[in-house]
Every structure is written in structure tokens, then in C-alpha cells.
Image (cartoon, rainbow, N blue to C red):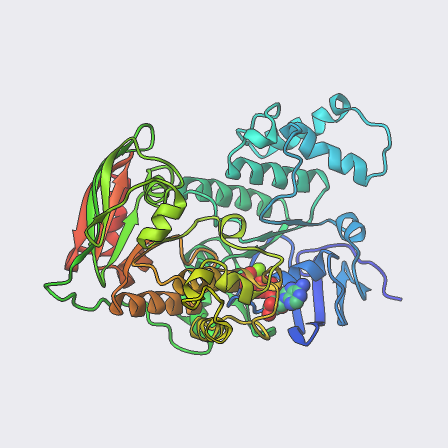
Amino acid sequence: MVQPEQADARQPVLAVRDITKTYGGVRALSDVSLELMPGEVHCLAGENGCGKSTLIKIISGAERPDRGEIVIDGVAHPAMDPAGAIRSGIQVIYQDFSLFPNLTVAENITLTSAVADGKRLYSAAALRPAADRIVAELGLDLDLDADVERLTVADRQLTAICRALVHEARVIIMDEPTTALTHSEVARLFALVERLRDRGVALVFVSHKLDEVLEVSQRVTILRSGRHVVTAAAGELSPAAIAHHMTGREINEERVVSALPIDAPTVLDVRELNLAGAFEDVTFSLRRGEILGVTGLLGSGRTEIAEALFGITRPDSGTVHVDGAPLTGHRIEDAVRAGIGYVPEDRLTQGLFLEKSIADNIIAGSLDRHRSRSRLLDRARVRSTIQSLFERLKVKAPNTRAVVRSLSGGNAQRVVIAKWLATQPKVLMLNGPTVGVDVGSKAEILEILRNEAERGMGVIVISDDAPELVSCCHRVLIVRRGRIVHELAGDDVTVSRIQDRMAA
Ligand SMILES: Nc1ncnc2c1ncn2[C@@H]1O[C@H](COP(=O)(O)OP(=O)(O)OP(=O)(O)O)[C@@H](O)[C@H]1O
Ligand SMILES: [Mg+2]
């Protein structure tokens, strides 16, 4: 029997050894080992579906490994259960934060710990000092009396972190914590991460944004197809080296835009579109084969413009023409009939049926296009559409019958895009098309959009990822406080110009 030892700086607070996990026939992890030292930020990186979330679920006791062990303070555990993991000081902050929306911040921070401690009688008032203390210690500007449902995403995240600390977390694991945050919120989170590190907490950080990863972490572990590839000090890695370890190949992030034919006709024409409180005087056009970037800070109105074009909201005034024909009606059906498609920002709640198969999701929006003249479904054509999009988008799943819920984040995103490509829209708007997508897949998704544009589609990419816009857009519109304030085209489309104009 191994005795627990005093935690010191050289002994890992947590180690996983030779973890293997299979789901049905899918090998999610093969013999993965990892050590976490107190006071380090350790980034877990790798392509979509490489096993990051699975490893986290095993550490937190949400899933059992087939083989391998978890070692905490020198004591080996063949498997964790969720309560045991929490008692050992392991806390996972998932993307939904698992908070109670109708309770206050203070209650969320403390109540679950009271429940975990098995105290059957507790009063919020008695627990309040614990919440006060954590918030004060971390120097956070968080209103403890606010209901959680009224908080911004960033403040919910802080609440979840405070709750983790009330549990005396020694390991805090965050799965893609920055995807829904603005730049200043990310800076605030990173400042907090520094303070937690100073207190000796070990942090595991999962992110697809490699520049962020290198900024915040001391060590980086990269997985590929469920296997450990490398663990190295962040200072020894460049973004290109990480991308190479992740994918095993070179990733081209250079600007690749085809020359548009001079006579390419206008496919979308938007004139003086207004929606009070959201945007004003929005006028632009898009040509067939063109990829147009729309960018601006969170809250600038970029999403509201797309939602109005897609019939989710109704503009107060203005006109929209698709292929020269006026868009009449302002419902989603009208937009779809006119040939507009929209991949929303929040794909998991707005874009997909999670309990349905990949095949059902791909075909969901285009059944009518697959009917014969006698209105019968052409099953052979349905199958071939599904299969060809599944292959073109390289969705990583055993086959098209797999349910979407079992897919990793980036693969779910490919299914949403496949669904819209199946409808063959004239104009496809994508909001954050590569959020949560790994570098390799990101390059592939942008390549797919370039190919669709070359086949004649008009594409609008809404994104705050400047390198992504530069790599694929013919033109970029910059939206600030509901107005298009700049247009960059040709050689003016550069990362520094976009970032300057966004912030100015
Ligand atoms: N419940 C499940 N049933 C079947 N397969 C699963 C299940 N959970 C995960 N998988 C599979 O295990 C593999 C690893 O998935 P995981 O979610 O760990 O990837 P990830 O690295 O977190 O990816 P992403 O960056 O896209 O979030 C994938 O092939 C995924 O489809
Ligand atoms: Mg994941």
C-alpha cells in the first residue's frame, strides 16, 4: 500500500497513468499518461475528437477508464467517482458551468459545497461569509446577491471558479473556457488564473486558440487520435510546432483568395437596413463567388445584422435583394426560400438535433429538395447527398448513423455546415464557423468555404478571429456600435488593420 505523502512542489498533485478508454468500437484514449504539478497551468491541446474531454471526464470520475489509474498525492485509484474526485480537490468547470440559474451568486458558490459535505441543514446566511471571503481574496468584482440567470457568461464562469475554490480545489480543469468571452473578459480570466497559480492550484486548460495557450500555460500536452504525442514547456513551443504535433502535418494559414471574375453578378444586396437598438443604415452587397468577412467586437451588432437577414428578427426598414429579387416577408422560411442559409453562433442549441443521427441532421433542412415530381422522397439521392457531405466534410464518426451528441465539438460543427450545404443556398452566412474547431480542421473548413464560393455561392463569415478572416475573405466589413464603419479589400485585408479598426 502506497502511503500518501506531503504535497510538495516536485510531487505531482495528480497523475494519470496509462489510461485507455473505448466507446463501442471507438478508441478514445490509448495509454495516456499525464502529471500535474501544483502551481502550474497545463494546457491540453489536440484536434477535435483526439480525446481531451474524455480524459477530463475520467479524471473527474464522470467516466470510468477501461485500463489505467489515477494517482492523487501518491495514492493510486483505478477509477474515480465524482464525489471522490471532489473530495480529492478536483474540480471541472464545464462549458455550461452547471449552476442553478434561479439562485444567487452567493448561494451558487456555497450551497453545493454544503450539499457535498452532507450537511442536511444549512442556511444561506450562515454560508454567506465563505462566499464573501473567496470573492474578496480573489479581488473579484462580482455581485453576490445577483441571480445567476442575470449574469454575463464571464461572470457565470467566475461564479463557477469561486464555487470550485470553496471546495478547496487543488486541481481546476477548464474545458474551452474562453470561447464565449470577449477580449477583456479573457484578460480578466487570465489574471485570475495567475492568482490561482500563486496559491498552488494546478490548472488544466483546454483551448484551440494556440496563441492564448502559449500566453497562459507553463506546460503543454498534445494528444493526437487518443495518444499522447508530447509534453513540453510552453516556452519551447511555437504555434506552428503545436499545430504540427497536433496534426502531423504542416498547416497553411496564409491568405488564399481566388480572383473574382470582373463580371461576377451581385447575389445579395442590402440597402439601408435599420433595426432600432441593434444596427443602423447597413448597406453592402455580395457577389457570387465572394467571401465577405463581417467583424466587430462582441455587442457591435454583427450577429444582429445576420439574424435580421435570416428572418430571426424583423428590421424596421431597408431592402434586401437575393439574385435581383426582393426579399419579401421577414420570416426564416422566407429567407430560406430566397436562398439564404445561416450557421448560428450557438450551434448546439440552435443548429442541431443532438439526439438524432448525423444523417438525419444533414438532411433535416433539405428534404424538399430531394423529392421527385410526384412529391415522393428520392431515397437514393438522399443517401448520396448524406454520404458525399459526410465525406467532403470529413466528419470523424464511425458512420452517418452515429448520434450527434456523441460527436466532439468540432465534428458537430462540421455537421451543421453539411446541413446547410445540403440546401444549396445562394448565400451562406456563418457565425463563428470555426469556434471550438482545431487548427487543422479550421484550415479544412475554410478550404470547404473557398470551394463552395468558387462553385458560385456567396459566403459571409462573421468572426472576430482576424487571421481566419485574412486567410479566406475577399473583403472585410467592420461593424462598430451597429454601423459598418470600415471596409477593407484586397491587400488591405491584414490582421493588424482588422484589429486596429475593430478597437478604434
Ligand atoms: N459517449 C460517447 N459515445 C461514443 N463516442 C464518444 C462518446 N464520447 C466521446 N466519444 C468519441 O471519443 C472520441 C474523443 O472525443 P472527445 O470528446 O474526448 O474529443 P475532444 O478532444 O474533446 O474534441 P473537441 O476538441 O472537438 O471537443 C471522439 O471520437 C468521440 O466521437
Ligand atoms: Mg471536447
